[in-house]
Image (cartoon, rainbow, N blue to C red; front, side, top):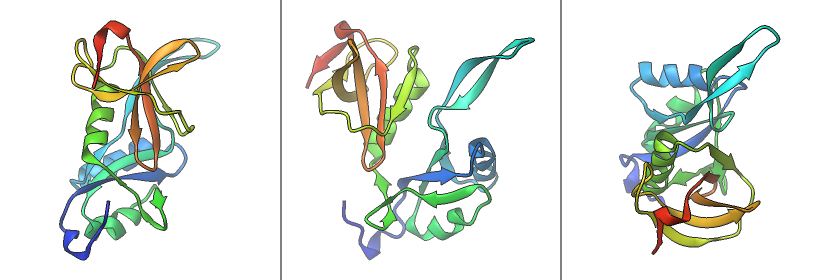
Length: 172
């Protein structure tokens, strides 16, 4: 996707590295500044010697997504807890709106665990989930360790994936 000078007022999604374990604090700062952002979260059970507790943790440790204009890059980069933008060829990498929408749907609606990987996953068959909690998500069907998963790729960033029943998808 080309970035030209006349796009300075156009909102785009970007991924940011955060300081270690600072994702939720950065999220709070973005909320105070009215910066559109997305921090994918999931609940996990943590076990200590004396108790069990369900805690909310980031799906992708050390990252948060923001939807800003190129003019806002400097302001966002200077906020406490933000380390750097994920870059592609030296400039902040833009993540297409459709990919972010599919990832948000997957993370927010899936009853199965959503995994995130930066591995190079081999391309799969293009599919649309036609029923169930993920209805409308577009991705690729891949088989990993004997399980069928729908993968949503984020340009220059990685893949979100979750297990699906074959009967819920259709080829596109």
